[in-house]
Image (cartoon, helix red, strand yellow):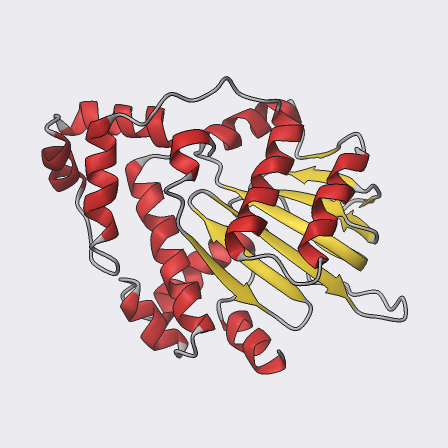
Length: 269
């Protein structure tokens, strides 16, 4: 999500004891400084809907599957693939929405296999080192780091033209509706297009289907509310989820963790 759209990017930042989580439309970057003294952390076998790019930033970021241990500083995991992370030191997890343009290109990069080791690139560690710079970078800077890594992996796209003014109208309209539902038919009316034509143009311009874009915005709003001190229930309602269980199911589906982990991270911070 570069060029004209990057200037309009929305995001949510969650700072934890070990690192931070930054979400933006269609992707998120999770950075961790895992347990000092070389003690290794192993999480449970899990699956999630997003692509996961696991990167070493001066640590170890191995992936265990039901059948083997995959070692390497850069590992790409496809959606819904069972795995556990066995990290040590500084690592980063870059999650990408499968329905996005970047997700389609990552699927092609996997070439039909569930998990792949990618060639290490010293630029990754250099770029990620900025996350731990003092003073800590702002959420927008961390989002830019995630986008820069994706560019290195997927190759630079051609320069983007300015966003279509019809899509800009819809994005501006949505900015004033935080926490409120937005129907595709209503958005199409704002764009002065038929729903089918609007859906096609939105994917072409933004890189995400409209409903998927809305889901990521709701996730970001809920994470932001938890970061401000709201309970999961209050944050879920503010973001337009039916209840905290609905938010937690959605969060778990995307990232393989319960949303309650956000509150635990806040109390540990």
